[in-house]
Amino acid sequence: MAFKEYGAYDAMGLAELVRSRQVSAGELLDEAVARTDRVDPSINAVVVRHEDFARRQIQAGLPAGPFTGVPFLLKDLDLLDGTRTTFGCSIYKDYVADHSGTLASRYLAAGLTIFGKSATPEFGQMVTTECRLHGPTRNPWNLDHSPGGSSGGAAAAVAARILPVAHATDGGGSIRVPASACGVFGLKPTRARNPVGPDKAEGWGSFSCGHVVSISVRDSAAMLDATHGAEPTSPYYAPQPERPFLEEVGRDPGRLRVFFTDKTPYGEAIDPEVAAAVRDTARLLEGLGHHVEERAPTLAVEPSVVAPVVISANTAVTVRAAEQLFGRAMNRDDFETYTIANVETARKNSAADYVLGQHNAFLVSRSLASFFEACDIFLSPTLCLPPVRLGEIDTNADDLSHIRPLLKRYVPGTSMFNMSGQPSMSVPLAWSAAGLPLGMMFTARFGDEAVLFRLAAQLEAERPWKNRLPPTCA
Image 1: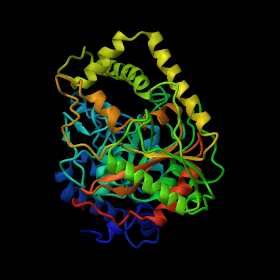
Image 2 (image 1 turned 180 degrees about the vertical axis):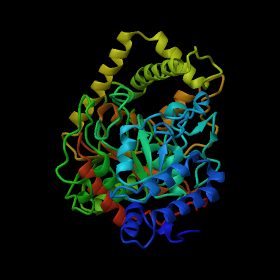
Image 3 (image 1 turned 120 degrees about the vertical axis):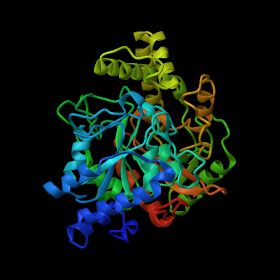
């Protein structure tokens, strides 16, 4: 191993070692590659490897950024010029990008060395990471269980300490769900906080955004400082922060008004261990001096009704783009059954159905805006069941009827904050009796990542998780 103490540092700590010349970027890359070789055969988190790209970065001279020399993985949905991106889809297995995404370019400018891409379900559509092309990604805490999705590869790689921080995206919970399942920190930023261009103006009808999963709160804050801000093609942008997000970490959050629920958004009971963890977290917050009250929002429309309309239409456009790229009509052999089903749903829906779906998302947003007039933070379970076993959600089954009822029980509470655009985070504060992580979700008002970073840092200090390692660990 090039640098045996690597696993003791978060990304900011590694960057400081490079700045002070205690270790080189090449040594960090060697160690990340060695850790991938050692642990990835067990978890299948790194599905595209291009260490040569990262070595060329180092040889050319890395920019002086906040993360100079820190190894990094992009999610296998984003483009990096000259490297493969498969989107978790068989027809793209040999696709090489001819340009980089705006967010990827900002990661390069921050000095990160990008040595590969992390696993995602096909087109990032599911809350587990088990695509037909690459096979299942496994949870480092228990290899029979899912690491969540769609950023399951990123969360599994960070949990297994291949690296301390990795790119992730979230269109319905895809940062928070795997962060919860893998016991790492994951914050979904405010809508339009980070860019999604240059090839599109928004993702999934404004539901989707990109950021990272990490082992420390400060890495997430510093990364958002490095990447946020509009690009020339942005149709809208998030409110400017009062100060750098990193300066919020360690800042006194004050006495926050916290509402919480240990039920689903529909008032249904959840797994008893998860419910107990929510109540334990509420007591922790009360002990820290916050006002805590059991109260949940009443939504005008069920998010589970809204999301399929918008996501299926966007999936149909993704398939059409593939047809244009490859110059032929696509068939059932080209995509998983779930993708085909989404395309068929989109074809049955009208343009008016899509507009109604977006309007219903607005109604969800309005319900939440009213609810947050009375509180600063809403605490709820990220997942309402412990991480599911691999194979329970089968996107390539002939019969997909099992998926929607399971999703409504498993992850009913994340997507509404994609619809409202509010910042929301999963914090690794609890574990089940079987040793599986149970993330707690905290959501703030639109544009207020600052209060989340302050609270997350307070919780990290009170109940640290960085040194809690899974059985499968580099």
